[in-house]
Length: 98
Image (tube, rainbow, N blue to C red; front, side, top):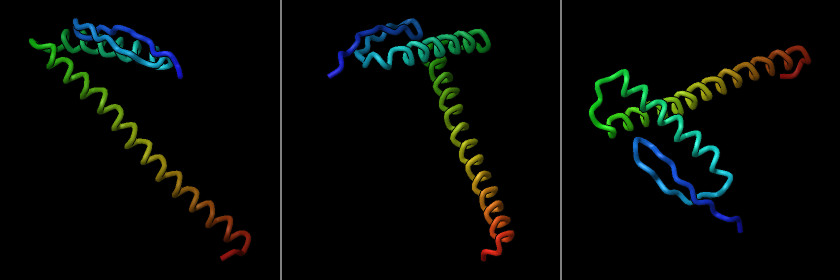
């Protein structure tokens, strides 16, 4: 059984104590840093009074990136399938396979 690690992450002026697997630490610290940077950007760019609004905007930004990657990946997979089908048809024609 692996040892758990206790860390504290600061997000939007709040500290969150977490108990995690050591393999998660780097990713969580990077995520918290990215949230902090984006939150500061939103606070400078928009007249936001509430940290909750800033965090909601951050959540939307990150979630939309994940969704778009899924959409782009799906479109790329469809294109690859179509190219493979065309290649298969070409090879079959050249080899006389029906």
